Image 1: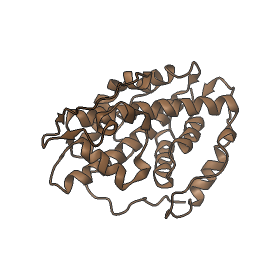
Image 2: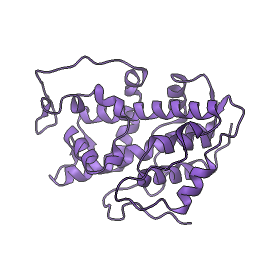
Image 3: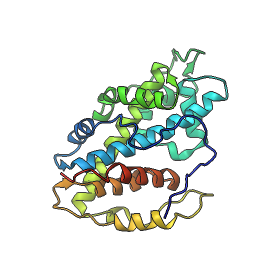
Length: 259
């Protein structure tokens, strides 16, 4: 069955193929996974995780771009990120980053001027350091490549937020994939597919995919592509974004070897 676009009204720059932009390389993905688990990560799993992360970041950037366009701007500021998430709750991913970012930590005290520069707040909370946050800078090049693919740039604070969200999201994806392997599938998380209020029921493609991914196939020591896809269904609660991420990851790994 052909997957229909989730939001046909979207306009503006968009990549023609999921393989046109590959900002998060498998070596980077595997480095993140090594922070989480000692399990081997197959090449197809690394490509799938990179694809899912790219899909999520692209959707966040697209939402922020549309918010900025309403003010005739092509340079994104953190306020555009907040607007994108406020308009589409599916984009609320990598939320552990929110504890470390001024954008989210103190919404009433942190302001940005017209150039997107942080105006210091009197209230500051102490940041906890985790591997995902410490390693967030690794995603800067990929984030900037995605921004260019959308025809926009971003102020440094916005790039840092996108870095952090990508890092935390991929770290969470790695943890869930490792759990899927250890427990032999997604049984721990149940079989109910969450659907947001007002969303249509999941199409047959997605239902069939979720059923097929419910059981881990492998030796118990290797994270494979299907384990990443199962983890994706756990991380992404909105069916529109989840469906798109699964479809693009499947396309991105069609010609990738399992090793």
